[in-house]
Amino acid sequence: MQQAIAILDSGVGGLTVVKEVMRQLPQEKIIYFGDTARAPYGPRQPEEVKLFTTQIVDYLMRFSPKMIVIACNTATAVALDDIRKRVSIPVLGVIGPGARAAIKATRSGTIGIIGTVGTIRSGAYERALKSIAPGTTVYSHACPQLVPIVESGHFEGPATLQIVKDSLQELRNKPIDCLVLGCTHYPFLSEQIRKVMGKKVLLISSADETASEISTVLNHRRYLAKNDETPVHRFFCSGEPALFKKITTNWLKEQIQDTPVVWQVPNFR
Ligand code: DGL
Image (cartoon, rainbow, N blue to C red):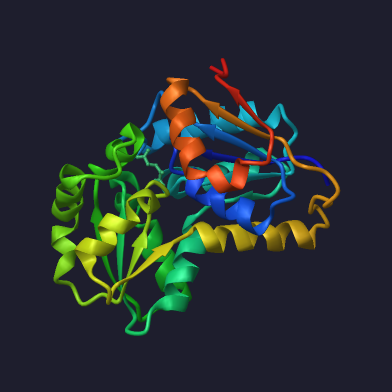
């Protein structure tokens, strides 16, 4: 099926999922929407995040995608069920895949979760983990300073490392053997997070598992794209396009070097 997979996030975070999808399913056409004008979603009330997610999904449905991927934990936590009722195509979130990846990886059954205030407050990860493995011990912590750093494009340098260190302070002495990056923006900072948490703590991103789930669902429905055409990807952002384009092209450079890309700032509200 030649229709696109539509992937959305509050900003550039969902590109961590896009990269994995492009690696695992290079023949698939992607439409990405980053709501950069209204990021971060983490500190917002659930009703507002639901509204924004619905607006974006309605916009993306104009392109007749074959699947919607909510590549944002904050939006998955509050809007996944509503969106599933709203559209008749498959809708995937990132919390289920993230929880499954963590349960596969943990040896001790003691897992750390970091995410936005909205995601941590929702308790969605804890529920997902405990529904798979009820005996799991979970330490959750919100890191509200990390998304703005990623959106600003300043991933490196001592100031960033210090903010990462401060944000993770509370989890550093906990007996966890893996840490779920429960916000799709955080893999941009995985080098710094690894430095702070040490080698013994495995970092879990939901991106790989989400991409495998996309592949499974598309395969099951016989919706996979055929290999005979180079896909054209489309990237939309609601805010300032120059920084979005720079972060996107740096992050996806290998994946999009031979692929035509269309950039757009939509007027969707
Ligand atoms: N990347 C998103 C998430 O996974 C949203 C971060 C935000 O906008 O606060 O939660």
